Length: 486
Ligand code: HEM
Image (cartoon, rainbow, N blue to C red):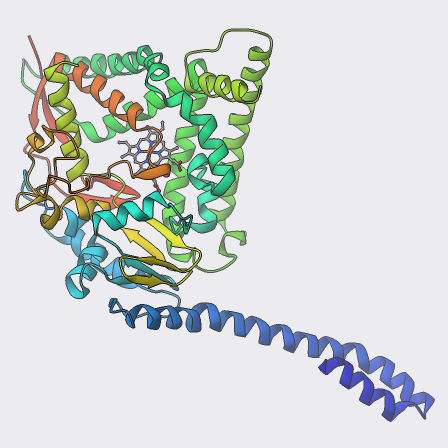
């Protein structure tokens, strides 16, 4: 508009003199470009102000008007500096006494601090996006069951998520539904049972390695082992072997690359709010893209080889990739001791839930628990904190009491009776963990094989310091003293 007015004015003023006409022809392009540049800068500035200031303030007002208090919005950074300070303070405190399970202040310092200061239903800021904390179990279930399709997953890692290769977990809508339908059958118990030999052989490797360590230790003295890296290696090996069978080593390479990718994602975590940041050719960004490409290349190669042997009528291997391809092709064309182990595993998952919180974004206005949430708000479900909530689990919420699960999950929370369960180690609803039976089966086989060969106790060198780095984990490892059973 401004440019055409300018052209009109120049046109009138200059039409009479040929030299003026020539000057006008020379002047016109730079002027148009200048006007265009000003318009673009003004548009970008308006967008940036809307994104970094006006929209967050609007959302903040809408939430406050309904009684939701919380930390004050700081442009762009949100609560990142506060979160960093609280996490550093939590880590600098002395470790917890062994046997103390009150880990929420250490593992979720920002959520813990905000709930103490502003109440259970309060708000923190993830960059320019408000994160409202929801702790009532029935509301958590409503959000996770996503009956009306108002929520989408919001892990907060935006563009980085794609590079982390979380497969099914990053899809939404019909793409997610299609993938989940294809993958589901591979995780049915009768198919998982075909993987038991692979589980057992990984556990046998671990047991014989530990036997070697104990044998090498001084005459019969218990041997100290940090079981945290050992368990990480075991779960990595199990998944590589069951997922990729004979291509086990390639599978392992994928896990090494994934580990590096998570480490790099943590390095850029503070900058991911900046639009387009992941497009910049920084050293970390370039490395992350190369890792993603290498993983994709390995997977594509493995799939192509298997698909051609399936088409040639060869048997499917009893590994996940084989079962997945089988189920995709079909589509497109214990006794008392076991119950006790299950109770112990549930209680461990309650107190030390690895995925401390889930996040969902409202993409249209939504009413929940009497509050109307505008579109663009993240609902944070602090599952670890709910698992430690005395209002839900009773005064002994922070105690290790596996027998609370004696009558099943539904009756475990103190409110018992008709109160709906508040136990969410694997999420809830349609997006709950597809690998939960796999994970529990693996843990039970591992425990049974280890307990059959060794006795162990905590080592005096163990410091009880759970922290949250992508998952809840022991900050200084998990040292135990191992003794071989006669
Ligand atoms: C103790 C071990 C595990 C825990 C605590 C766990 C926890 C979870 C949780 C809480 C979710 C829900 C995420 C959300 O709703 O946003 C989830 C999803 C998922 N988990 Fe697990 N998980 C475990 C092991 C596994 C294993 C062994 C596999 C695969 C072999 C697996 C595959 C998945 C997948 C694919 C999803 C996404 C499902 C979807 O979006 O439809 N998990 N997990």
